[in-house]
Amino acid sequence: MNPVFEEQIAIKKQKKMKKITSILLILIATLALNAYGQTDSTRTQGKVTPVKLHIEGMACEFCARGLKNSLEKLDGITIHKIDPKKGFATLSFNQDNIPSDQTLTKTVENAGFKLTKIQRNKENDSGEES
Ligand SMILES: [Cu+2]
Image (cartoon, rainbow, N blue to C red):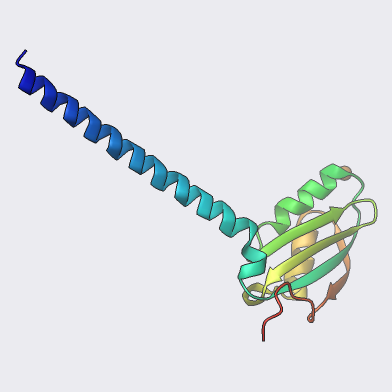
């Protein structure tokens, strides 16, 4: 093969590698940013409202998991802890997605349990900004 031609092929290969490398770098950067945004969302996205649900009927971790699956369908929810033995779930909601008592009651009922009390804490937010 003609050496000039070979050199051109080599240059082309190099360019391709560079392109692949930069695409990979962009991908990694995007993933990293997403991960950061998720773990940090409660701090950066303004105010959240903590809600504690008192629930009757949970007996074990499987019950807790079933409840978790139902709760996860609510918009703007962060599930902090579900304790089947003590019978509570600590959650927080984005300020724009605070559910009504009725919605919470229904969600717990759909999971097969009984919601006995709802504690809403309006003052508590994660970022002090005013
Ligand atoms: Cu159970």
